[in-house]
Length: 221
Image 1 (tube, rainbow, N blue to C red):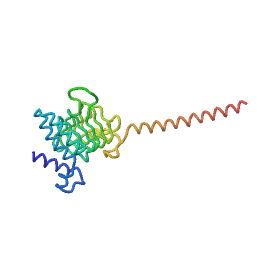
Image 2: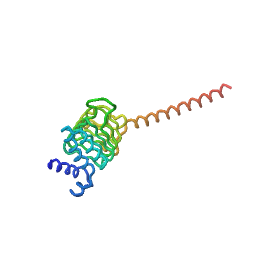
Image 3: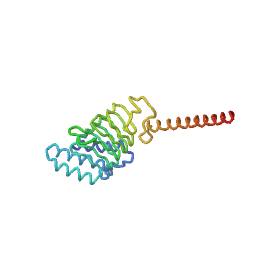
Image 4: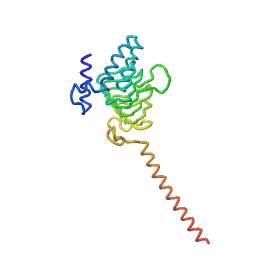
């Protein structure tokens, strides 16, 4: 247990440049508190004390703004940065060395039974406001862009962005830009801009044809 706690604290120092001291991290990092609270709730859940586990998880949610269902399985060195509004569903599975930013939802898509939440691989980054919805796998070393809505499996070593999320980098081969989860490419916006350029070109061509038609009418008269 203490080894896990040390790993959790070390993960904060490795991924948050604002962390200054162990005391500060232990006392003020809500993401860390949520993870530790979840470990207690998860043990109660596995022991069959489901109601008590839910009470613990709801208390942690009240204190931190982070809701992790006690049935969720979380690996080592998870880092939840800031964390307000993070929701992790009951059948969600999270691997090792995962980073989650505020406003992320790892949820389902309806009232289906059984495995209905995503499985997140190792070394995954899920940026601010991303929604990962459904029972599928987010491959190892993948990155989910800010605000993305992911509704299908993401291969390992991929970067996805947009609504609905699209792959923009895979296996180190850049489709558009290198990963910067603040300044990610948006394939949908790029398509809209291209359509606007084509519409403007067509508008100019139509206007030119109208002018030509008017000129021809004057010539006939």
